[in-house]
Image (cartoon, rainbow, N blue to C red; front, side):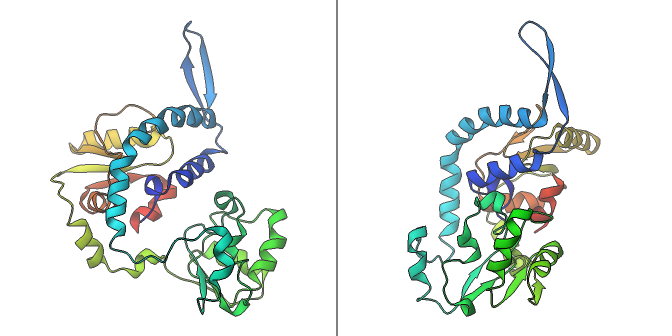
Length: 276
């Protein structure tokens, strides 16, 4: 559920950069003197996000309030700093790490806490639905991951690719399990969505993280073909498009839009998360 733009800001930016870092597509643009020039998709992303983030900063407070209100339904342990992690192991019989891309060193900045390096008793180490977010580990990372994962008492991952990565490193029985969001029943998700007060009907929900004019163009054509309005979260990234932008919605509204949309248009990398 905590996908795409709903994720914390630093993670969102990291995912956006990663999603397009290998793209070589160029966009024609014109300067002040009508000189035609081109930028790569990566440069375009940096340009767009440099202007988008200040705007999102102004819109952040209403969304933050909605997240805090939603979090009141959940039971959290007290927050701790990294320097306090070592003291936690005496308080728990098991320490479990998971799930969405917790072992993706591109997003965690190679923070070894996600590999439970602060836990001295290996029998306490376990993972649930851990995800790498990469097809394979970089060669200079394999040695440490091999050592760290070999110390786990129990390992489960979210994807078959993750299972393959782990089994190539350690002699451990690795299980593929469902994403934690699927441990909640459909009925429970629908009850949450029904709390939303939206009254929209006959609409397309565009759920977007990276800059993509193609995705927006498709949504525009789909809306015109079926006479549907377009609702976008957080806002159109890639080209201007007529519709309703919703940069301040919280989890309840997001669930309602997913549930009630005639079509959901999103990126391939986010389709899995949107389905969940």
